[in-house]
Image 1 (cartoon, rainbow, N blue to C red):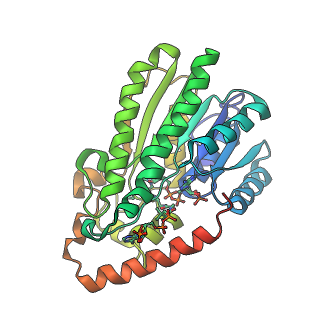
Image 2 (tube, rainbow, N blue to C red):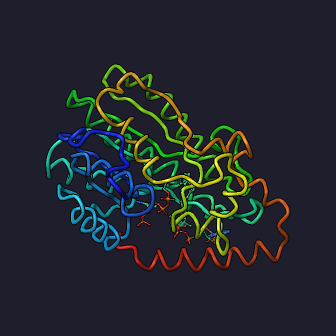
Length: 298
Ligand code: HXC
Ligand code: NAP
């Protein structure tokens, strides 16, 4: 990331302590980098310890400051409690949380088993809630304010054929944010959601457009003729997380070049695929999943 493309003044986020789940890769890494570059202390959390450590070293090498790698599986509420205990012991109360960790893959819904549904819902729906509840309770008990951003998709407005467990889970998190924005507003804890369109990442490409380039498809169909730039996403996350935006609460903001309005921004186009195409894609997704699974340390 080029910090000069960030639209904010240096030091804007000094004194902030922010946890980014899934911060070792993809969009989480980019948002973590922006917070760090603007002066925040950043905790990045995920299941692959080596990936987190590599990202920590890369970001601190580029910007200085402090990034802490936190190996944790958010599907496990006890593991979350232990990880957040360590963060509190390390430097005190967090000021912000970005619920960015997720799992997803494309599949015909009739090809899913209950375990396949759980593989996604346990990360996105349950894990995001467990994390929010653990940290929210601490903020309330300490009388501290807090700021939560959830990374969703535009499918929270129109669903998404062929990624149904993700669409259901992300919609549930939107409902959580809109509910808690009201319930916990009196504690100074606010909630907003970012709904990105396509920002090509390895994790997303391997599971949602394996073997093809989402980038070229998006260039044809997106009103702006391109995919998102990471600094555009990071700028929005910083705006929502920084002091000065306190009155923004309970909102879901799309950042997709108006793809949602133009095309629905989802996978409806895959209705034309035949059995052989689905089988080929499932094989490719399995290979990526197995590779990442082998690298998990928690
Ligand atoms: C059907 C599948 C499948 C597929 C897996 N399963 N892949 N079923 N089609 N392509 C089934 C398996 O057969 C198994 O069920 C069950 O799902 C669990 O599989 P595991 O491999 O054991 O899952 P697990 O190790 O829990 O891994 C979870 C995961 C994995 C979600 C499958 O991909 C993961 O951890 N991903 C994290 C990173 C990620 O997904 N990033 C992308 C985010 S992008 P059975 O019954 O056979 O045992 C994103 C973008 C959205 O969200 C917006 C874009 C515009
Ligand atoms: P990604 O790089 O695969 O990010 C997912 C991250 O979540 C990984 O770092 C992964 O790390 C972590 N994670 C998954 N399961 C976890 C668990 N159980 N516990 C802890 N961490 C876990 O994909 P991405 O594209 O950057 O996606 C990031 C977020 O953006 C997701 O919420 C996604 O739905 C959303 N999004 C992305 C796009 C896009 O175009 N890229 C568009 C819309 C929305 P480990 O595997 O090491 O645990």
